[in-house]
Amino acid sequence: MDNGPSRTALATAYSRAYHQIADQPTIFTDDLAIPLLGVTADELTALSTRPADPVGAVISDRGRRLFFATRARAAEDAIAAAVAAGTRQLVILGAGLDTFAYRSQNPDLRVFEIDHPATQAWKRDRLAAVGIDIPATVSLVPVDFETQDLAAELESAAFVRTEPAIFIWLGVIFYLTPSAARATLEYIAGQTQPVEVIFDYLQSASTDEDRAHLQARAKRLADAGEPFVTYFTPDEIDRLLRTLGFATIEDRAAQDVITTYLGESMNCGEEPAALRASRILRTRR
Image 1: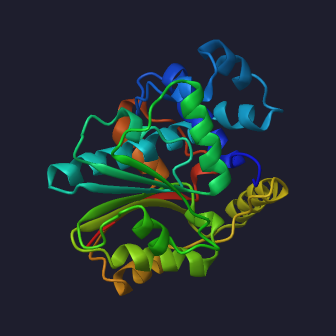
Image 2: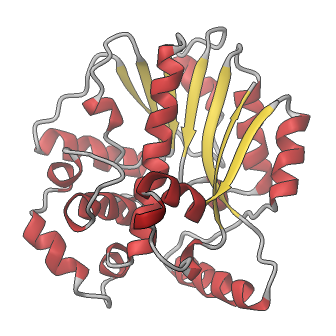
Image 3: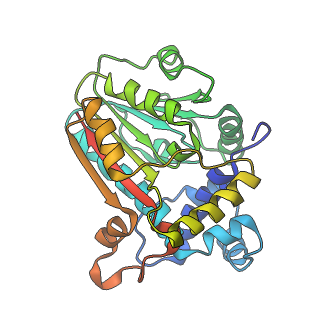
């Protein structure tokens, strides 16, 4: 990933973009997703018919596509609620090609996008290439979670530690070591209240079938240089968060959250194997 974007960040962005044209109704609306990638709707559709292509395999998987859309929608719903309650700082950890900061109409909300330097440099180039300006309220802060200090880098970007904030942390925690994941949660817990974080994590497998599926999935990502490192059970993450002072914890299976947005009559069918380990968690203190 040293010379370009994270492959998983790119696949997620393509999946969110294809959701705009392939799924009706949409869970998540993002009119910048396709322009930022520099592709057309026809090109996305063609890519979805090529399962041998790593990105094509992801975007053609409806279950994963709906999950990526769902966690983005859940995050933006949480942001809206936090802003309505008076929060004026948003930190997006592992922002990838997220476009919220460029669609937001709130001039009072400061947005700090945190990402690996290579992915963030690529995003800057894409924004410039398609003529999307970086608003004055947005700071792009390059951080490698394993080797750099998040607190120091955010402080250098004028993030205010003593004011309320909401943190969005999607598609990241399972690629970190347990110590890096805990350190990030400790940092968030130290923010002046109210503070909340929305993140997704992978649940440890409890059956042979799920274990085999996770191992195969982990091997594919490890071969691409982005291995899974950390898993939690719901009880483990609950204990960790409560130890850090978080009192309100909403931890839900991915399929449940998808169904919440689509409605019982329009759910995505039997739970796909790719989603059984995925959970979306929102916690406040």
